Amino acid sequence: MFEKIIGQDQVKRYLQNGVEQNQLHHALLFAGDRGVGKSFLAVQLAKVLMGEAKIDSGNHPDLHIIRPTGKGQMIAIDDIRKLCDEVYKPPFEAKQKVFIIEDADRMAAPSANALLKTLEEPTLDSTIIMLSSQPNALLPTILSRSLKLQFFPLSEDQIEAHLKESGFGAEVARMAAISSDGSIGEALKIVQNSDWDQKRSCLIQMLSAGSYLDYMKKAEALSKMIEKEEEQVSASDDLFNQIGMWFRDLKLLQEGGDIELLFFPELEKASSTDIDLELALSCIEEARGANRRYIKLVPCLEYIFLKLLS
Image 1 (cartoon, rainbow, N blue to C red):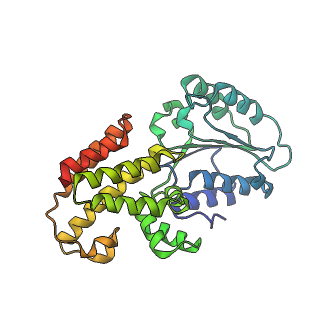
Image 2: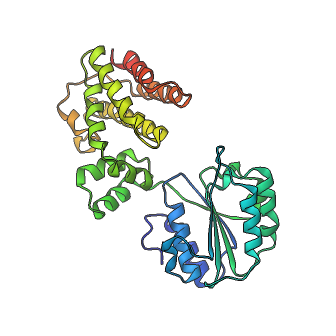
Image 3: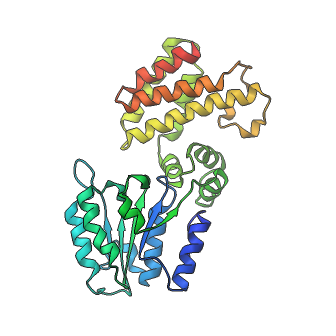
């Protein structure tokens, strides 16, 4: 029923049993990090409940997807009111109506309160699925009227296997899996990014630079690449994650670990270096935090050099 979904076996078991026994809760909360399959599984569940293949076209009259809008990226109260009205109408074509609320934690109190009555008085032909990476930000009254299903990060092996099955090379798949932090969505972004190899090569040259000047030239080049990304925050986060993996690899080599576990195979022949991994990761998190506070990327990378590589 949900064979295309990677991992999340416990969630899939509950949903399959609920569908087969006609005992699925009317209000579901899919909780978990971004990119672990919440949206994909919500649409697959909608297909099962509605008995419709037309959902793939994206304009089925009985599937309603509500997303944050506007400059503040919040769930509009008008969209929630429209949802509440639609819940009590009969389906147009399908057996059921399905409502998917993405980033449900982006509902302000008025929107959440508008939804409450509908959650308290459900209809038999409607299912509401809320998706959230920050479920604790939802009102307690919303949480108490929903069935929370927890999604967990995927294993590196699961992500790597999926990428290989999708036609990506073994080395790219392995490195994307390690870099993904358990998110298949993040892994796909990495492998589908045409500049990924170029950025990785530039990063290796930066971290291997023998002088401050060479390091800073590569830092500038990386910054310009990331400025072209649609999601610059995500791209910067991935960069800091990879820098962390560089120092983790150096520590692995220092301890005589298995070279097959290296994220950067290029380091296999690197000379032994005394690495304080805890200090390195702490420094990288400080640089990441500064970047999230709108400090430009280049001085954040410079901080890493001055603290760890000079």
